[in-house]
Image (tube, rainbow, N blue to C red):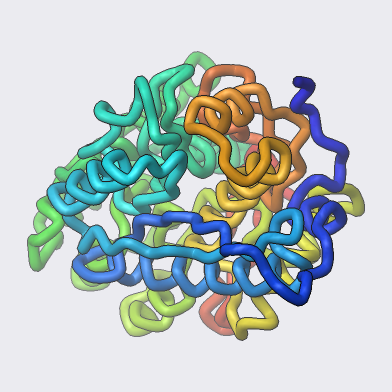
Length: 391
């Protein structure tokens, strides 16, 4: 079966193929999503839940999937790899063909091996996670290396050459550190230097010692690799030590609630490798803009702003719904896997997806722009073109 979709087969395209709800609605199509509703990653899980609720409402207002309403079913992994593994095993026992989540890298890592070969299909919502080529696991968003490639290109073309790295010792920190080291070691970056590389435990209360050592190395940019509370620990250390250079945070921190929480310790310049759907009005007319129009309208209807949670989770949900729209009401995990593996030309809010390269993501560095937090306007602003070239 040819899996190439017309340009408008995004949520808007799904809507165009969906029937108005009948008087007697069929049983809802349940979409299982594992989120970190409690625990250290709850700030991200709860934000993603709100975005998924907005998506559910929008899809159902337009007839569901071929007349069948959808129902988002949330399972809380409590930000725990052990709980996540238990939930994944419960999905297997129930014969669930596909589930989304977790947004927590360690949680996805706990069950990756048991679902990779035979399913169910999993769309992990943590971009740092790398899924084996051809496996039943897919990952939302661009890879850490692709995010970093766009980011480093931006600073390189701005004339920056001296970089420092500060990351956590958990799976998320290791993934982003590896991405920084990989990209900075590429031939095009041979003139760039890593002048310092420090680590800290996510539960540490201070990073002042690490930041003091990095400051002594005279970097021009500090690259960080963590999300949530540990990022606040970094920002407090930066303030305490008086480090006054551009600070890079991973895009999992691009939450308005988090920006408000860190307002008193915000550095002069906080930049992010970001996705194209974070800011409305930055995409030219075409299928991607069409997808974004539906996305932004749904969020506004729920009094939400685009953030790391909604931007990361939206396209994976729409891809799963498109699988059901094409395969029928009761597809197997194998059928959904085959559908996504061959999917190309799918216009999402962050770009055109093509899963045929084996990367299990569908998008790469061209889906990435560099953004900056503007404390005065209390919003994010776009600094680069797709791929990282400065505007």
